[in-house]
Image (cartoon, helix red, strand yellow):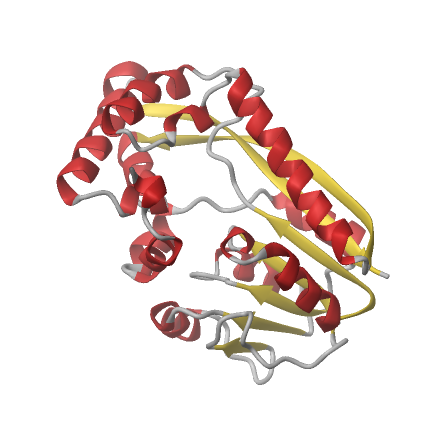
Length: 274
């Protein structure tokens, strides 16, 4: 099963083809950045630190809000090259630190906002949160989010049609896209773990989770390219990966006329540095 593949190997798949990844992955909803502005102070003059920016999908949206500076901590050298080639190069506004977050030497109590978009789950949470607390100025904010391609609380025929594909390949992933009681329990437990980890550090208040629900309508080709970027799909043996992706494309073409609407949920966790 892909779930048994070492975490380091799964994490390394994102830099294989940064262009394909950047084009396939979905943007985060605009309401998320509105919340970061309203709740966390994102805007002109803000000093932002982003952990694991990948290809810069969230970074570009953050930059449009006019922060004074954005510091990016990215360990994958392939992604570092892509970020430096594609992001704005105004003097001093964007800085890329080619290090693992755990090892990066960063100035304490400097940042107004530290964020992680679809990347924080790769880190040891409590250790990383203690470092985040040291980097934030008092009153600064921590925010972490990711896209879930499927919502356990909103029925979806597309999700139901995917279950046999995952069961056949034994990836262990398929049920997380369903509306089963197990999927809802997993979602609740994940939220509880993340909130508890932040609280356990003892350096944050105003700890909360906000779920942003939206929909994405995608062609069969786009769905296949998107699914190919998921780490547990990317690490499958080539024949199994091709079979899964062909099946996903076939579901969209034959079951939904070549275009499908996917219920999305983007959980946003935020906390203020005491």
